[in-house]
Length: 144
Image: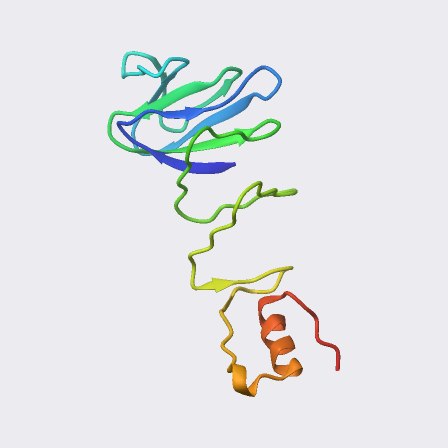
């Protein structure tokens, strides 16, 4: 499940009968949804704590602010940009079909805890020093 914070601007959640989704109102205010972009508070309500299964793409908004969880019953497909605050956990394969732009201060690969970007001095660089820097990030294993 991924979480998004929604407010007074409609957010589109893609779904169809072959890729249904579950919407979970995780807290805050009520959310409202329908298949057209002119969704408002008169449309289908998803009360705080409630869950709804959707089999068509819907537009979702809240009268103030709420946290919405979206669980794919199959694959997740989000149109346009998606901003997520907090941790995103994916179970299974993650495929990036474009540039990977990492703006964080740390990174870790292959189960290694995130570490700050290693710093090496070019004029003093040895193969061993470079290997250890890559090992800090989890990119290589250095054997003794």
